[in-house]
Image 1 (tube, rainbow, N blue to C red):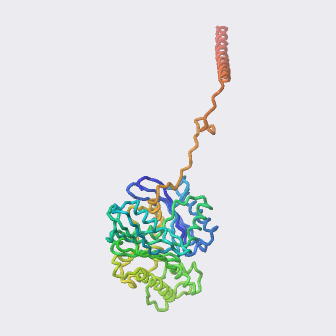
Image 2 (tube, rainbow, N blue to C red):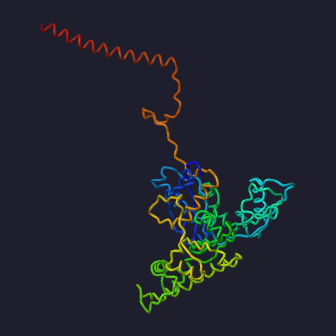
Length: 442
């Protein structure tokens, strides 16, 4: 990321489609120049496109809004990095090994071969492999976190294979390159991108959890000994609370407003107080608490699924996503897990220049933008070509003028000289006539 260039990313979530344009700077730094979004309503469910035509239209609308931003115009978006998230994303543990004929220094090429074997690990026919994330290495029965440069003959590694349903990527491909003509510069797994930027190396070594609480899904990533240990997507999110509140006799839009303004994940004694439109606050609190506790209980149980205990995660829990904004949710997570919980923040080397939005609203797309910039050196935006304009203002000045024929140039020259001669004669005649008049007056 040493060369300065413009990049773009698109993230398709269950509640909104978010696009961002950024500019890389030297020193692996990124300026997020513009962020725009559009709601997804029913065209996306659990992070996967359901209505391709509707989703494509909304993606185009987001890209158009980005291109109109002063920080972006007159450049046009020709390629994007595509964030990958959804209910079917999860990790599967895979063990691979490589036996060399003799003791050899472990090079990048050898590690690439090992990773390629992990990527080719057989999985369920309903799933496809997206990425292979190394968890641990063992060289000649000695475990190491830094295998490159070590000497050994037998290499054993454990990888977390990231998998998803094929439809997830196929529908994104149909929406962007095929329907919109926008290049897909690469898929970026949102959970991996946020983990790379929001968690410090110390937290990963100690053991920590990253929780992305979305509208319809909650993604949990657990790190231990500096590497990913577990990754899963739960089919629960903030919209479950909203839909539960509609049982109080209100539309979903109104329920969402009440959840944001008055919802609390902690049980609060409120008597029989009544809010606007006759809705009892005690009823709102009871419903919110019940669903919030279910979500947090499922988050806590992922620690056991990862083969760990709470004492193995002294780095605590880092939360992002719209669901993490619910009043009292951070305290509830801490109470249920006995682990410190905090909201994730973007690192200082990622700077948000669009001040209309809080960083928490675009943290996922910003992380995917940064992660995408490390995949390759693609330029995602193109400036319009300038057409040459001649001094005379004649169009098509960029074309090479034809050489005039010698005869025409000569005859044209004669015409210009004869006209000039006539002008001189007329002027001379005028002054000579004046002279004659003067002599007569004398």
